Image (tube, rainbow, N blue to C red; front, side, top):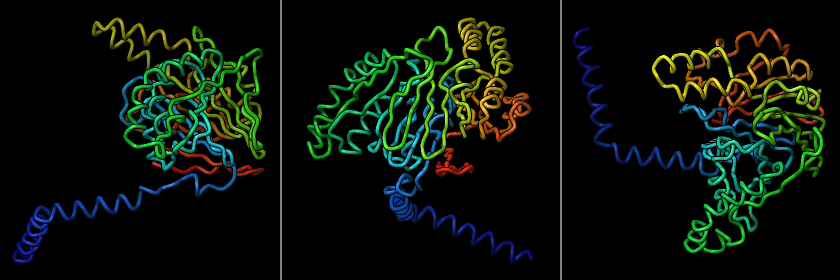
Amino acid sequence: MKKLGIGLAALAALALAAIFVFQKPIGSWVFERAIKQNADRDTIAGLDDGLHVGLCGTGSPMPNPDRAGPCNIVIAGEQIFLVDIGEGGGRNLALMGINAGELDGVLLTHFHSDHIDGMGPIMLNHWVRGTNTAPLPVYGPTGVEAIVAGFNAAYATDNTYRTAHHGEDIAPSTGGGAAARAFEMTADQEVVLENGGLTITAFKVPHDPVDPAVGYRFDYGGRSLCISGDTKKSANLERVCDGADLIVHEALQPVMVTEMQEQLAAMGNDSTAKILFDIKDYHASPEDAAESAQTAGAQMLVLSHLVPPLPSAYLYPAFLGDAEDRFDGPLIVGEDGMFFSLQPDGEEIERTKLM
């Protein structure tokens, strides 16, 4: 037995030495294999017809290495839209196998910085990854024109570099930047787009002092989903999203945020403590979201834009509180890369993970 142990140890040492000796060729082989497996990955090409939503960002402005800023990808047949584009959302789209060059537009719920600070990269990738000859359409309530103009100004110089370096065939000079598509919310809800069997409806939500602030409902193929945007508990959301198959709803757990606030105040960090105190009055709790989904008769509720950061799923029960007692269907704490598919005229919701 002793000789056998020595022999195994010698083999292990030899194998370890071989790994270091051949590190360069092994590393090259691993890299080439990864390129072959991922370079041409195309999630959209493999999708069946239907209504799909992916979570390309479930985080908040609070640091969390596992969650990008608020970002949702909605696919309805051959049409593809982003709802909000927080920091890191574009990176996650690529990791999910979704080419930003195929986007038909971005829909903004409101103009808080964490919902728009991924706009620059998504404009660039829409342009050069799709060799698009027209800017990326960006839909939003009145005021979106100023947001788009600002990003266009910031990226104008870079755009000239891209065309000069890569040429008109890759970076057409007419395709950079974004184009604002503003709509006016004259009522509690407005249809903002109807095309190819898809209807997108914007609806007002309470996020004072932020105004305007909206959520969106998508109807396609006899299925429907809603994305809340940032909101307190909203009767208008419950009304407009009545009968929706799936609701993606923001959520802030006030008990956990209060604990953070009190700890920071005790440490003398009064400014951050005040911010944490303030944010509790214009977000919905997990319990609020559950009650709204129950009232709307939703089949499934997915929580996103999570506050505070949740570095481990072990914290999910504490985050949810008693939300699960207030909603009859599946209640899911969203994670970056989750993807939900609703087949036409069906009832099932298929759940997968793309990253």
